[in-house]
Image (cartoon, rainbow, N blue to C red; front, side, top):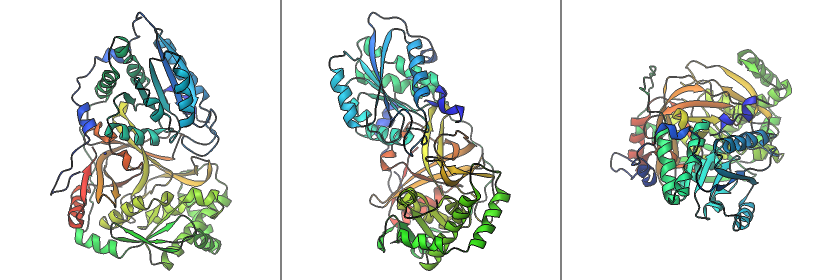
Length: 522
């Protein structure tokens, strides 16, 4: 296993032209705090009169991960937790740390009940896996709580749950989203605010102040030239009306509610699987040979898996043609684990996106609609669905997924390098790590049909993170705007869709034409 897995360094939200929505009030309030001295981040804590008792809770499935999820099946959290405990004990001799694990609300409630007699002064909850709801229960204690993202492990839940805390003004929860150990140490030191008689709200204010102070200032952002050409809002809407998204999540076959005015249709797993079975095997072999020639590397993927993946691409393409559709989104893992389909669609999605069609993950029709609308607006540029991660220590957002295109400037544009690897969470099937180009302006979007809103932020592509944890492709980018505000809108959901190019004016024009709003989340 990659040694990065066990490194302590792995620790660590509208406006249209007619009307601006209010920003996230909680995030705006954060900016009123003044920075702490930088020495507060690294200097050992002075010995005070009484040792604070801090309960550490690791929110995770098990010490060795038993099932697919971030970071990945089989991941051993033991060394990570051990190093973290050791670091905190060494750094804070005046504090007593009591580490435990919890996988859900029930276990969190047991911990709280037991702590009634333990004189616990505060809590640290590390979100190790994504969706274990532990922090919410612990927060009801009213005691100061430091909420920490284990990067590329718990980041999805961390962002969604933190956003909800900010919007509901949970007064006792401060948070850390950093890969730099010093930022965790500095935040833990903020418990001394309470030890000296401060309130949990003052503890949160201190954590917020420190997080802002330790986030690098915005860079001077210069971009490589990108000759993006877009169509008018009227033309984009015409193309959207003439498009179709296929949803594959079960054996339902029926029309579905349109998304952004784009027709949507349910088709069955069995139809996709039959198309896969009937795929021309010789044609599939030629696709495999092309992958073998063009990929920088193929890691731990048998040729038989490549063959089934190529057949799935051909099957999906035939289904799109049959239904006169240009986009498909599949509940890929549910279909595969449920034995409804017999090949991962990741490489097929990669091919579809490179040729100007849309292949969307996880039967996420909102993201598929976002991909489709702005693919049409940009004459075929692919959008990359991602599970983002925020790292304040680098002033970055990392767009991570196991499906990504290699022709980010459209079917006729240049191709960037890629590697074929297993799907990360379960180490099965085949997917791509696309080494996406740096120094370009990107636009990241998500739509919400009920709200009639488009979330929007922009960032500069900086580099690609090779960390073995979580999804294979990880585009590192510096957001343009307010990093604190960027924590606010994940209650919409985790997924975002990233396009290369400056889509700001076209996005606003389309929103105005549709009567929607745009919310700038940074």
